[in-house]
Length: 216
Image 1 (cartoon, rainbow, N blue to C red):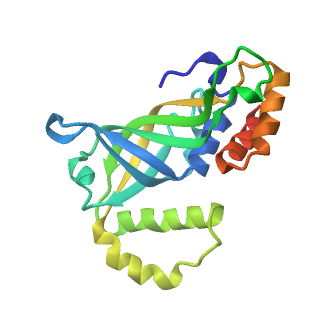
Image 2 (cartoon, rainbow, N blue to C red):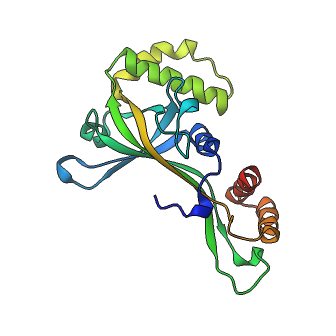
């Protein structure tokens, strides 16, 4: 991913925040027999205690993630153990109208946050290894995004459906983060833009405003 200098994360914690918060990632790999690239949206979680100790500009190199998808998905059949792959995490995004700048001439743009993680896939065996990914996924997102649901009574159901699930770990070897939040604009324009987005009826615009305040 091409990332202009203005939009690079100033702190490694920025990219780690996106990976933690945006649990649904886009898994991209080469197709089997040199077919078109394959892409699947799938839930992904930090695996073990590797995320806080990742290195590099994004703080992600060396971290391990885990994810899963439906085994009936043709993408699963095309995956190979040790294969190189890409995980794309999407953060808040919004169209930016020049009316918010209060100057002319001007041009519209799109503000957004994205993290690209490159790495190696390792396919997990059926049964307990895959079931542990499912259990950990539930614990992770019930804690951060859910209501604290107790999965205990549903564990027998998990065991019933796990044969249809394909799980993997993903070892990050390279990562880029792009935080395009109008950093190239003078502070007065950024302040006007942030206020306008915060008052917008569009949820995405309000999320971008909050992200601009957080990472400003």
